[in-house]
Length: 378
Ligand code: PMP
Image (cartoon, rainbow, N blue to C red):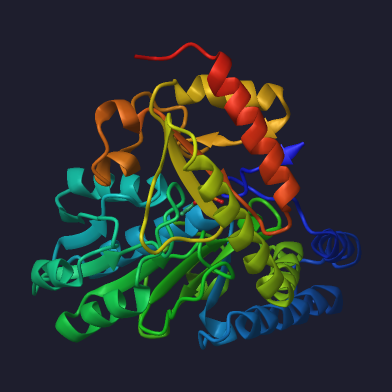
């Protein structure tokens, strides 16, 4: 199989599986239990958080600022609902972009129905206009949420300058959904108050992730219960997930350079080959992740092409896995100014950095053959 859908999810690393399995079998004690076996789990939990904090470098994070969650969907919900429930008396204006993941956008839409005023920042192929952001900040803005890397087209946003602008010009908190960014592109999160991440995008365990919550930030929790994670996320502490997350981030750090180099050369190769195909248009983003490459099939239905590739054992994505059940085109491509027809014909290739050029070559050959024999959609 050729698997070019790593932005949806990745294989699980062997070391991660081993650390997870060991913790499941050997350390099943509840970290909240006061007996020795429970307290052994608690110690390992604290140790795992210390390691996670270390592997988040160069972003300086203390172990106490880490909340283990079920993944980025939860971390995003907790950040946005948590801030707005806690600080709404200061103001009810919140800002995000048009191209966030649904786990951010849908929360904003929910809040809009409940009396919040939303500003959606536009995007273009150069990124997000910092001046536009500065102008949109108001005395009653309490939150700005901007992703690190877009999951559909791979655009890298300048989180350092965007978050710095927010801090210098307002009292708003800054949240970054770093799910497609962490350990894939270098970004500076030092001005971010909240950072979300999901382990399975980086060879970790599904249903696990984290939220970095800075000490200056308070949140109203989404889950109430036993008061774990300083009351911010009740529920029995998931020790195996925390240990596996530490392993995930360690392995990601050790493999960063090789993963990036391989992804960069595969992406460069694919861009040059796709550019030779008349009926294909690459979604050309100025600053984009080496792990994501999107293109539009100008004369064919992308879903038909993706299905034909799948029959050839090549896995790619149309729109994003989370939103591909929604009818209509990609709101992300729409935000980048593509026509209605183009927005329904986007194909995303996403890599993990273990692939080689031979796989790229097979993909191009199969794609060309499929485009040649498939009925045109004109
Ligand atoms: N944010 C982004 C940018 C994503 O790509 C995803 C996963 N597609 C998520 C959030 C949600 O992650 P999860 O499904 O693991 O909660």
